[in-house]
Image (cartoon, rainbow over all chains, first blue to last red; front, side, top):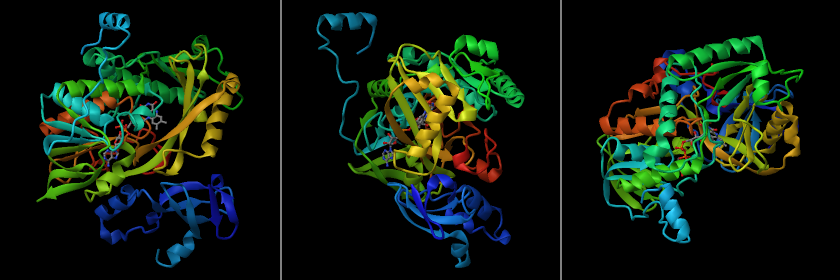
Length: 90
Length: 415
Ligand SMILES: Cc1cc2nc3c(=O)[nH]c(=O)nc-3n(C[C@H](O)[C@H](O)[C@H](O)COP(=O)(O)OP(=O)(O)OC[C@H]3O[C@@H](n4cnc5c(N)ncnc54)[C@H](O)[C@@H]3O)c2cc1C
């Protein structure tokens, strides 16, 4: 799989480590309580199809990306810098 | 039809014309007491539900063919060498069931207790394996710590002097081994069918019917089927199926690959795992070297993996036993794992009355097939968790009682 890094162009997915669903960017407010954190930490949508997910460019520029990928075909549909996604309110 | 040596002899004289299909191919009825979704662990569940718990009006629905899921895609290793009290007694129950399985369902599943060795490379690893071995003994399993020489006696071809991971010994479970994966599900299917269970293939569940918080049936590609109790055991498809019941699970689906070489003369004495190199291997009765490594590591429903993992596994194999470089690869394939947030399974009721879940088997659910079926059947029949599966609850994450063998936290691709 090749990931279209927004700054570096196409990079081999092997240079990255995988974290999981990009919803991990949306950590709940502490005031929302334990149940909200439990959902955040443990539960996933786990879709068969388009999935937005966090990849870390460990062997590269150390940036976090939000990659949009199809989990049924492994086709990569796009990649953004996670900080841009987060800045835009995820 | 019972199978026996005599029967085989008689059939040989008659040109094997008397064998019958192993199970019927019935049309689905309008309603059942128990509908089991998924024909892997689900088939074992239906078998025990009918045979052990004396229930009737049971159907197993599978979207494909029996044996087409992970139960026919795994590397067939059976063992009970876990550490934690939530897991080890359950897997030891499974091991005991394996030991009596072929007599129990009168089918040759080629259960072969040829032993497993987990290799040790450092003092620290020896300590953790000694601890694990003791935990196994406490749960009634067998375990034995081998010195490097004892490993050498059994497997002289290993690279003992690899500079990075020299082999210093191993943790051995003699009673572990392999079984013929598809014969296991065929045996359960035949036994379930003889006990009156309807096996319905090519029947995908596309929705659940829930009234006042109670499940009343399922929608399928072969029409609506009413059910008082529904048990879901769909492995890698758990997330997608339970989403139809409005549930989010502590599970991600990942792909695991496996490999088999051309048939060779017997060389590998049992199962050997090289955890440090992400590699494990055994040899099938046909002679093929059966091996694998880690999951690819990203969410996937594709039933096929990518080349970097192939390379990684091949490197692990070459580091452990350089002679493997002379063998030619015959096939490789992938299966979709239901990787849970703590690496351990779930056998539990759900928030919907009458709807039960069996999931989260990660890359290790084949060995669990008998106990998973047995304990799930117990839950479906009695409404109460089986003694040996009582830690495998869905709410353990919220309660803080995770069963995390690896100590990796809520990160499925690290378990
Ligand atoms: C490459 C590989 C190697 C492995 N090696 C080992 C090993 O050595 N030892 C070990 O213990 N474990 C191993 N495993 C893990 C083990 O195979 C699984 O954990 C276990 O088989 C999963 O349970 P199951 O048998 O119920 O799954 P499956 O056999 O996959 O059963 C689930 C069934 O559900 C059906 N289904 C899905 N969705 C629907 C729907 N909507 N409607 C109807 N039916 C549906 C599927 O068609 C499938 O038949 C391995 C797995 C793989 C892929």
